Image 1 (cartoon, rainbow, N blue to C red):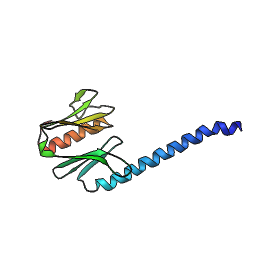
Image 2: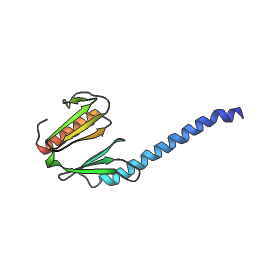
Image 3: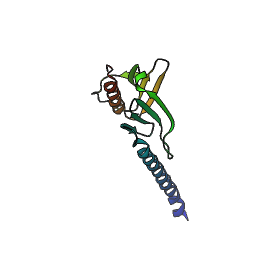
Image 4: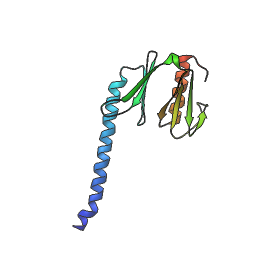
Length: 136
C-alpha cells in the first residue's frame, strides 16, 4: 500500500501534464483554422494577432478559437512601439529575452498586445511600420 501512495502523486502529475498538453493542442488547432483567413498571423499562449487587408485583429487564444477579438484599421495607427518591463525597445537586431508588449498608439487610446518573446514583438513592429510606411 505504501508503494501505491508513493506513485499516486506521479500519476496525478502526469495526468495534469497530459491535460495541459491536450488543452494547448486544441488551442493551436483552433488558431490554425482562424489564421487561414489572414495574410500574416501569430500565435502564442498570451495572444493571437492577424493582419487582413487594412485590418489588424487580435485576441486571446482558447480551445474554441480566439476570444475577446478586437479590430482596428491600420490607417488609424499613429505610432508602434515595443515595451519590456516599462522600457521601450528600439533596436530590432538587439538580442532581447523575455516577454514584451506591442504598443499601438491611436489618437484616442493606446493598446498593448502581449508577446511571450520580445524579439517577435520587435519583428512585428518592423513589419507593421514597413506596411504603413512609418519610421521605426
